[in-house]
Image (cartoon, rainbow, N blue to C red):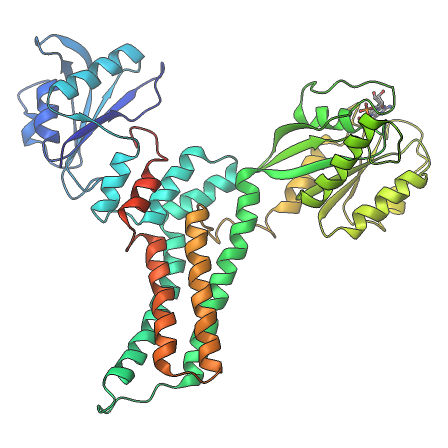
Length: 456
Ligand code: GDP
């Protein structure tokens, strides 16, 4: 395999930049561009050691001084010989060193190629590799923790446990089916059933966690609803921390849906500020209201806003009834607490146990609001330790495996031959092997690594 090189740190002016080389000729190539101060030679460096020296160009001129770290195969990230040259930031210098490495015989790495080699050399499973890709793009602490755990192989371990259990069942079945004359204990169908049911439960749990995980990772789809003038736009601006939509005193000015992302602690909300839900004759407004209603069906969090300085009217009550009939996470915000209070928090508690009084205008209660929202999604609903799938590919494999387990259970319960049961358990195990990459096709492998950036 060729020896590859890439700049592994973000390009820009920083304290240091790292140029990485991996492959058979990594050390030879590094020796051409890096010269250690003193008498030591790069070729003699042991694995896990560094040396201080200078990076020199073809003419022997010094480009920069830096540190060379050597990793000897197989004890490196990729499993091959790896050299890392740390130099002094700067786009120009870093690119120059990269060009020198290429001149020294290295090929420019493709996106994700270092991690791909690590996978091909058995250094990490496909799920862990996907964890690396995810970490590079994770939003929010929880997403990051989950990605870290995937990289450390927590998902792999959980899948592995199910896989082992399936293989154990298969082993028992195969022995019994293939060697009927041997004195092998008969397969206990009750035990087999129990094992399959446990496997099914484990996969179902993983799939459930995936959905919560997606919420955290991609942002929680949030809708702010309420009559005109209760302060929806003001609340949205408060959450965003800057002026976004035009806030006016004329009822019904927020006609279209505006979407924005906002980080609250560990979670990210994708918020749309909608037209108030109410009966209206105005065509433009109607569209806004219809849009708002359909958004309520789709979203993951409803923030319903009410004006504390005006008694609840028909419209407010209609909205309260509507949201309490939806099986959604919802938060009631009683706004304008800086004015005389005509609506109480306890009145609204009948419709949701999450009620908070704030003044969107003055910002009073903002932190409490942020904490409350964060607590609605963590940690009960999302446990980063229960590592979830990194992507739809993994989820699909798990779903297919679950399907096969269901079929095995049905076959077993309806008294089909153990041969038939064996076939479906075998397929379930195959799908899981595909998930972790033990049996990934080249197409899948390429797909996974194409998501990386160069240098990883
Ligand atoms: P929307 O139609 O629901 O989006 O309401 P707006 O955000 O446009 O607010 C309507 C009016 O209420 C504006 O004049 C805001 O300044 C005012 N408003 C919003 N929040 C508060 C608040 O907490 N206290 C007070 N006193 N006025 C507010």
